[in-house]
Length: 322
Picture 1 (cartoon, one colour):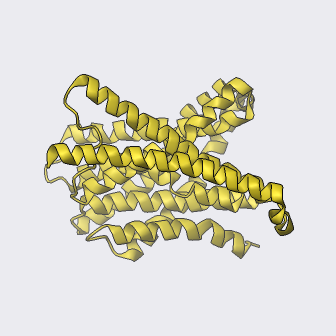
Picture 2 (spheres, rainbow, N blue to C red):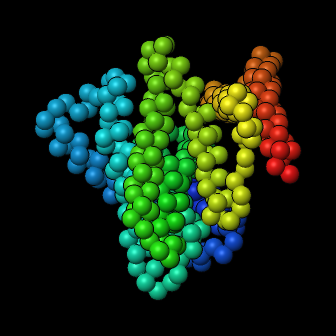
Picture 3 (tube, helix red, strand yellow):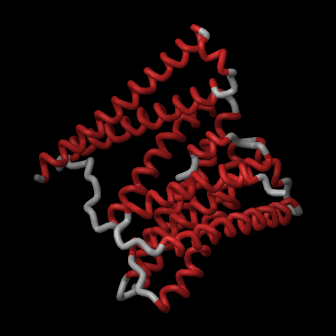
């Protein structure tokens, strides 16, 4: 029997995020259509799981495929060859097939197709959440934090597909753009999983995990920029200088802000994961309170510093262009 509470925890956060994007996009498709794509996305998640299972069974007949999980290069190979292509391929098919029939009846906008891709990705996330909860391999907090990740993976090919479908003159280069965007999503998908796996290896490799949240922050920024494009809004400019030296300086500031902001979020994530198993009475212990307060202030400082760099770059861009 399906545990209703697990099902709710798996589905409600992705549905809330879908509602957030639905209300942000003008001329959004009917909510029922988005829910249909959400359900199709969840089904595609089960299909991806089956395909991964079949792939590993076939691969194990030639080599010990499961041995790849014991070392980081093997994990990278598995992510690039199996997980990334299968999962992004299933999500892409879950958008393309229903959209093919819908475009016969309706003129689909760029933003509509992009929202379809987000809905499918969030449905895929709900299915993945349920699998993790059912097997007890992740907490509700960890999966809730990761709710937008699949949408961030799929944003490039969602944007490219929307460009192609909404175009009056569909050119061959637009089809190639879809493949390149899908390949970008596969690589980003694999890279996130590789960085998240680095924590369980030797000390030298663990440092790779500190690149995870900055990379996720950059992908979130990219998703927001693509959303602005489909809304017809200008993208937010951060690199505004004209000389090469000044542009490199601004790029360095952007990278520094991503490192600071991403690891500030990472620090808060680790703080919550550390103190969450404690009983309520333990929270009033002086040592525990000081630990929480000091770590919170430290990560808040880095986050505010990253935000300050971001505001400085935006102010510089406005001053140049307006």
